[in-house]
Image (cartoon, rainbow over all chains, first blue to last red; front, side):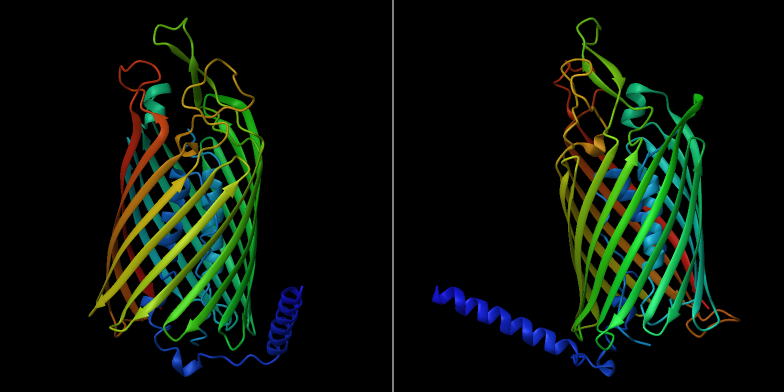
Length: 78
Length: 380
């Protein structure tokens, strides 16, 4: 019982800390530290035409589909 | 003749979502043009054709994109040679899309139409991407609606409809100055005529001298699938990158699969080399049988080898060369890329009935295919 209460308090404390942090998250990778992420070899999808084609091949040859997602990005390199 | 009923629509949606989501939230995609030649050769099937993609900004907050894609198919696949006659056909697909950037939000809309002699697919897709937390995080929500019309080349009166809906959510996260990762979840629902109108299943038939006969396959009219994929790319200390990815898939036809891949990227001067290994393993659909015990044994019946339990391996090698680094006329730079994928599929229950083996003891089918891609890219 004591363990259960401790667990509840810990979970609430972590959730509270996370909620509090939402308002003021400091980027832990600064814009000037993103030079490597801006390198084309780090692009998750550097060639969208090629990626779309090969996904089409896999979907034709296998029973699974979706979830491959796409590149997105978010390196904020602009 | 239909090559991949329902899968073409899926491919269209995949292309649309890729085109829609390739943009980084908070920054519009680069202006570029890509001209691709693709060739798939394996299992008695040869499919080749071009794909042209052109993307251009209009003002500071809009980017438009267009794509034209052609499949020229020559098929004498294991299905075709055992139950029908070899055929050739052509599929043409075009798409138009637009991205609109406002602050840290990118909104995308795309339309695609695919046509062949007996299959039409139209897909509309929308997505919204939002940069958050100092551009460390990008959240993307996407939706696509597809309408397909299935026909038969030997019966102009045959027409069936499918409706597909895709719901996607994706998160891309910068984790360290060397590591970026993305997590994607996608649900796809289908409703309508989901089987191939030409394909047959086989069942034991003592009245037939070969021991079996064929009857048309019949799939459920609905399918819902969920897939979750995770990928991460890491910048190695000596300017190279390594990527790992994994996807779990499950659907209401009882297919579950695991897919994993590892990629290594190594630049060397104007060249960039890439090597990739991909592994896929799946269970079969609950209505798949290689050989039914009697005619109409189950309510739903299928003998599509892609619905069989299987394991596939793909090895990829790619090289790209950058040129015009100092620009020429209105072109900023260009690259030429060549890749080859060696695909090997081992089917656990689908048998090769092209030989003379006793019914039910035929060897399991295996497929080897090679996929070539050659494409030029220009940024301007």
